[in-house]
Image 1 (tube, rainbow, N blue to C red):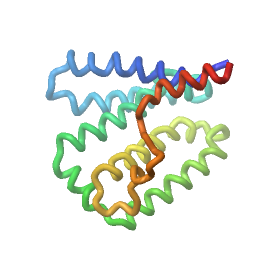
Image 2 (cartoon, rainbow, N blue to C red):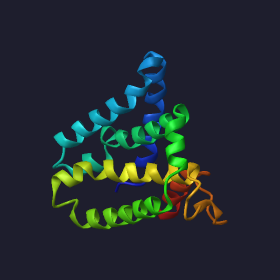
Image 3 (tube, helix red, strand yellow):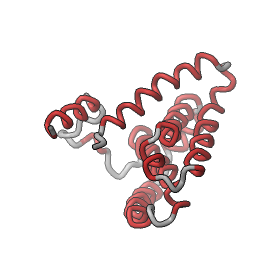
Image 4 (cartoon, rainbow, N blue to C red):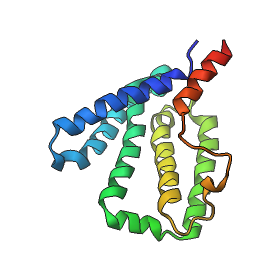
Length: 171
């Protein structure tokens, strides 16, 4: 039986390799690392599009998701124009994006296993949407709701430990 720790292992592999890329490559190539990892990962996903185990659990198949997050952080940290664009997004654009996200998730839940092309790019669109949510929650002054106002949410604190406790409770 596969457990949730596969997610933690993918993250750890990524966190070991990612700093090496930034250490080895010259600083002027940083902006290209994200795009190369995303393209490389999606070529890998396309080659393995008929193997669900690889599409949804292999490290090389999941690295583009993390690279999209890295690209989002890079753009927001290094480009004031990107942050300003996010900061000034219209509230209705934000709401429409959230609505599209939820429709996308429900639509692909029904179709991702029957259409291999959708299954290859499902994570690209979903990762981009979730990167948008993180950026919107951090930078947009026109947000219709800030999720951290929910007192019971403690996002990111001890998340790997929750996975491990889940395994202990399961057995």
